[in-house]
Amino acid sequence: MSTWFITGCSTGLGRALAQAVLAGGHNAVVTARDTANVRDLADAHPGTALALPLDVTDHQQVTAAVAAAEERFGAIDVLVNNAGYGYRAAVEEAGADDVRELFATNFFGAVDMIKAVLPGMRARRSGVIANISSIGARISPAGSGYYSATKAALEGMTASLRKETAPLGITAMVVEPGGFRTDFAGRSLRQSRTAIADYAGTAGKRRKENDSAHGTQPGDPAKAAQALIAAVEAPEPPFLLLLGDNAVDGYRAVEQAQRTELDAWERTSRSTGFVS
Image (cartoon, rainbow, N blue to C red; front, side, top):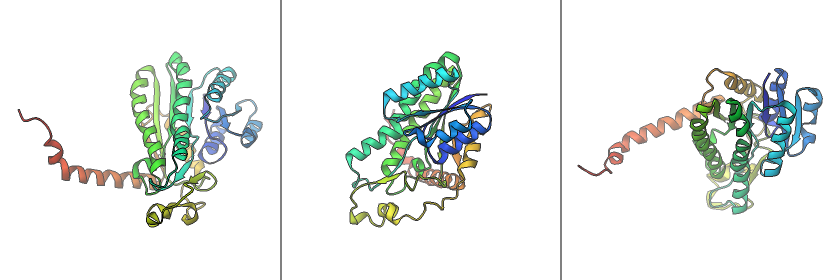
């Protein structure tokens, strides 16, 4: 039995993961800004579930939640940084306050959680940190520049974290889901308050009023949860776990395009050194 600490369990992948972890007989700290949204999980598993209020942008709540989890279960074996939300706007359209709030949740909130659990994991020389990113970090759709930036920042940090903590017995990994049938494109999605007409054909197509994807995404959150558990429990968890056909297809398309461009510009790239 291991203890999982999962942020953002109200809906979507976080909730599906919490259900799967608890069904597997593990302990789960299920968190949400409003614990009423996860109370049913705790009630259904009174011995193994702990529901806690958590806004990952509130440092005091972060430290209090980690302390409560460690007091209840003794240790946190797996941290899953899932809390976050989507934001759509052309780069020029976005409000500065919106962008700061987005980074505070999607990136800095995850960093705060990581720093809170690492002392315990270092002391035990074991643990897994799984950071939920998005295929958006790789394909960077028009209209999702700032959201993609938060996830790209999360991935860059995780890559360094993995190298820093591997000698200590701690694994850091990134999870890149594609489109899953969650509330991400519905209630959880925000966008700029203003729209600029010149971007109607690019970023504008992804605004909520023009997007019909919600409720039709191909991914099953329950299956994603099982895939994530399998990766975490593997003898050698991957650095990057892609989830969904469109995530794999998107990754391969970007990889091929980048390789083609790299080859085309390789001579220019290599021409920049001093000639001895």
